[in-house]
Amino acid sequence: MMETDMATIAEMLKAFALGFGLDLLGAILILIVGWWVAGRAAALVRHSLRNAKFVDTTIKPLAASIVRYVILIIVLIAVLSNFGVQTASIIAVLGAAGLAIGLALQGTLSNIAAGVMILILRPLKVDEFVEAGSVSGTVVEITLFTTLFKTADGVFISAPNSQIWNSAIKNYSRNPTRRLDIKVGISYDDDVDAALDFLKNLVASDPRVLKDPEPMSFVATLGESSVDLTARGWTNTADFWATFWDLSRRSKTELEAAGFSIPFPQRDLHIKEGAETASTAAPAKSAPAKSTPAKKPAARSTAAKPASKAAATKTAATKSTAAKKPAASKSTTTKS
Image 1 (cartoon, one colour):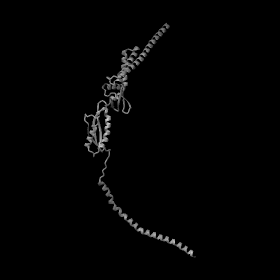
Image 2: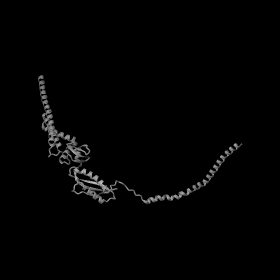
Image 3: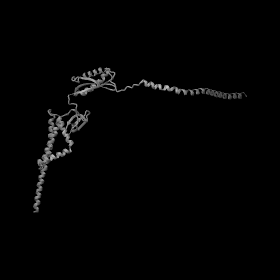
Image 4: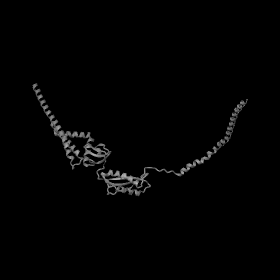
């Protein structure tokens, strides 16, 4: 009896191991094949949409990512079904797991939602120059989680979609035309009306500046050291920076050639003559008080001069007498 029970248990374990092993092997095969199919399908979608003109370039990478993730979800459900898990149970588990993941990954899911909203409303596209919050540059690609930018100096920026979507987006490339302002300061001594006409004609003479609306010029502000003028015109977006740089250079050189002066910041100092006269007259009043006591020492010095001369004369006479005595004695000794 005991041996029969052991044999039955062994048969059951053998059958379970065989069945589980086959299920595990089938699940591994489904997972490998499904992963390969998902990658190939995404590559096929990306390749087929690469040259499609009717599909916007912004949607192409997102469409490939969506196809890949959908196939992976189907593969995961097939793997679980291979182990005998009911589809209703799978959906319930996926719902609970989705809720937990949603609470844990709010920031990540918000990036996905923001990416979808950017693709639907399309405030920015690939190859457009935009400014969103603290990020500015040319849009390279919009993915499920991030938006990729390339700045004017070649720096790569990856910004979360939620940050882009939650900030004001300034698109410099969307409209076909842009307005340019050329600002120049002239001296207060120059003719303002002549300078305004000169700037207006200068901007209008550039062929890249549009005739409609017509260029204009006006006095912007009255600065501390200059009268600030502004010449305004419209140009195509593609020609904006080249036109702006060229007109900025020409406005400086041609204004100076026409006789106008472009002053640098300076400050004029005015000295009042009344204050200078008062400061000069103050020492003149005190001069007599100082010169009166100074005359007495001068008298003393005058009286002292004869005394010093007499002393000098007396000393010189004494020296000459002393010098003569040895000479006399010398001569006396010679005679004897």
